[in-house]
Length: 177
Image (cartoon, rainbow, N blue to C red):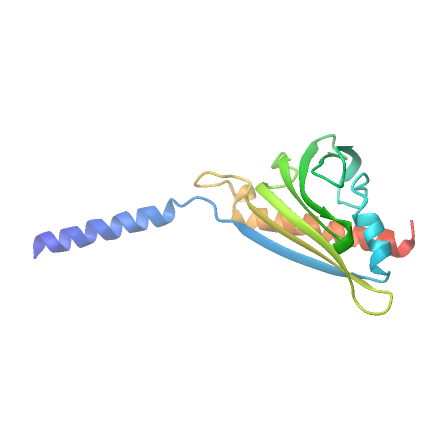
């Protein structure tokens, strides 16, 4: 009986230690915004992958390749840092495109293995809905992340960036610039 009790205690300790030592889990965020403009007008901004000035904190956009096929994009941020992206899918007929981030400093965007899809669709008379779905891992990929790069902080940082970008898009399109 004593051996069984010891075995159960050892198993419980191992399970507890394993549970505390898990790595990051994939996070998913979906944000959307309604814009007072037709979908074609909104897509003219979102689908212009050569110009990401509506994306939060972006100062300059450089494109390599053809949007009709796989292309790469470098976003230079206002602080001079860069985000390198590669497109997965670009479908203007569906008003959607998907991409993943190849390189980003976690102080700028606290995420690893980030991928996203942005879609524009009609939402009634002269209105549109833009949906941005992102999936990523936290900014710190090992166990015991610092507080600014844990799951919750990374999810908040990415979510805030997406919300601000969508608000910028709405302002830009509705203002007509």
